Length: 171
Image (cartoon, rainbow, N blue to C red; front, side, top):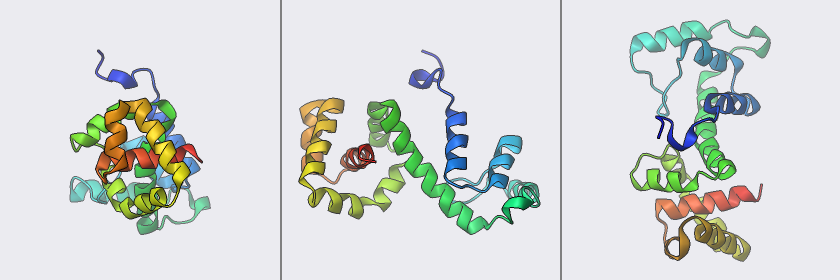
């Protein structure tokens, strides 16, 4: 198996950049990432003060036609995008089983996002019989009866993932 595993042959970076643009991430942020590979982590930090300074200097003045980047607002948009795009990627490519495995091992990129929207997901599925059936069908398809049972009576991170993916299927 190659280093890329099941993602071999996919242009993940191109897909990510296209999504950033579609979601309205400031073009200066995108260009600095593409040109210098600088971007805050999901907590909004950089590896060092020097990296943060280099990023700020690089972003300043880029794309004046877009106006100055409102960094706190851009970070909120970027973080929300990062979490939801991982879910959309899983849904659209069918890489749900690897996501479940990563989630069980606490190394899934959208795990914190699922926790953040836990109450919204649980409320949505509690009040919607059709969504519960869709969750059960997706769970059955991906992991069989065992996963159906886990999703039926659980608020586990895996159950939250399946609920989120079933909701995405509706959009």
